[in-house]
Length: 162
Image 1 (cartoon, one colour):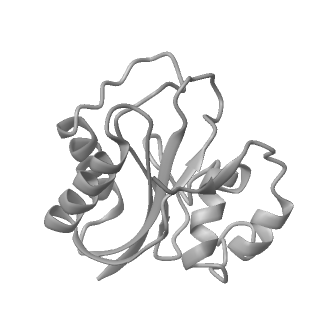
Image 2 (spheres, rainbow, N blue to C red):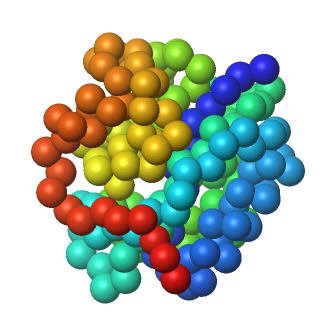
């Protein structure tokens, strides 16, 4: 079995509902959800949008292999209504990022693990540190907690409360 760490993010529609739907689909199609962070609200990163994002980190146990996992997460995003355009960062119903896959380092044309921007994004590091503060990044050889302390991202991130 493989242990993967995923980041969910959305800022369109009923954001809580889409997080719940994504978690249920991931559990049904990938394997057991072992842990979930709190839900965090954050300012959009890399573009301007009127509605803030909700983000949550999950630890999932799966038999899927990395490329297979990428395909499965993209199908889930599409089934939830995600529309991809070529214009870069934009608002979305659901985004599922693979942060870690066991302790592997993978760099292919279609997949980079650990996620290449993980260390630059407070909206990723805050929920990640909540459930895996001592996880060692296999490239930087630093804990997620250290990466958060060193992160230069100054956009706001806070625990969500409806």
